[in-house]
Image 1 (cartoon, rainbow, N blue to C red):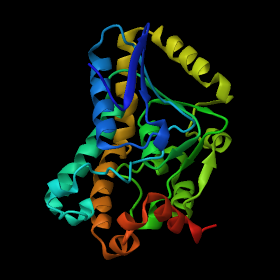
Image 2: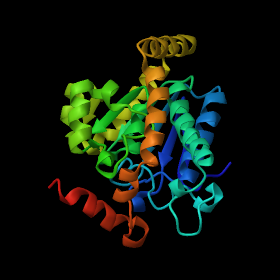
Image 3: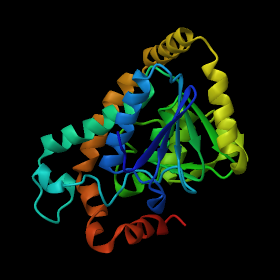
Image 4: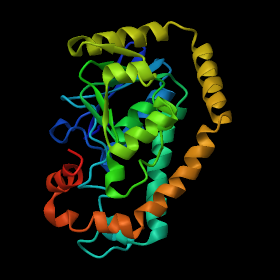
Length: 279
């Protein structure tokens, strides 16, 4: 089994899935999402694997969705050549978005404990990716943000911020498009540990191997019980409601106006215009 956008390896009881598009700050395109999904399945059925670490190559964990390649082929959604994917058939778009939604939730629901190893920028869908893991170890230079409300989207497909940092903090962060540092993320309970960048891999692997010593049935049962407790508090129902809200925002006139000309100006210029009024 070979991968193009990720690396997969196992070190004893720990499987490591590494996002490997450092030239684009590990932006997630369709292929990467599919390969993460496949690697999770591989880890889950491997009896030698007790813990899964999700990490990235390069200075950033993930810049979020790949805005150049989301999706790979807009024409397949009924859009004409050169149009955005949201200009296509609404039901096909819905199916595509729900695929992303299910892939994110699969990380949360995989039977084995997962640890996100986060350095540098962890933006929007990058934050969701880390949030779906059971634990997060962050380097001191890590930053978490979700600026997509500035472009007429209601956050990401999975609304993790209220659960990760609290409801008032989430409103403040999302409405301003700001970022929180690793130390603030630790204070708010978003991450479990903050360590020097040079120690990030060592500290994450030490934690993973320590967890792997716990009886395997106990690990799985406790993870399932805690996730169900969160679901009883409304987590899953809230996500199912939010994905519909998110879809509505994609087809709004506001969203279309804010994204007008994006293809012609390029991603860097689009982001510059998105953020310039807030500086």
